[in-house]
Length: 134
Image (cartoon, rainbow, N blue to C red; front, side):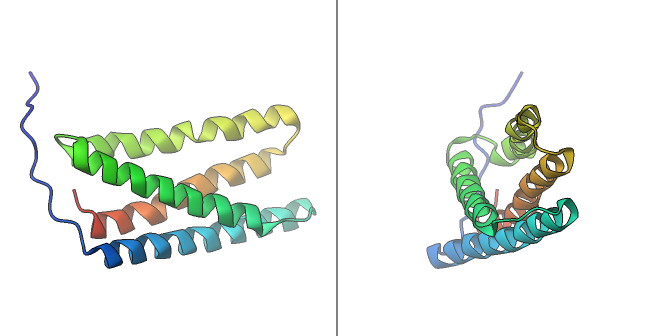
């Protein structure tokens, strides 16, 4: 039997602090992912355009923040939901990367992309926990 009692959610930080945390998380994720991309480019001997890693890192953190806020608002027990939802989303984000193998991308590049997804989550989740606690 499950309980439908709503868990009391701690108040969010002021909006400016939430925005700052999201921006900082996006910047850190973008920097780390750009460095990963540059490293892969050096190892493979190919050129690397950091614009892609920067854009997708920012988009990933923004989508993560929106999802976190939504779960926080609508789930009866948001901490319990996020405990399984965040890892599930990260693992599901590997599927498009793995599909790139069929188009001839190297295993190193695909693993690098997967690591970039983990970086976004590893940077964003602690930031969200501080300003949007569950």
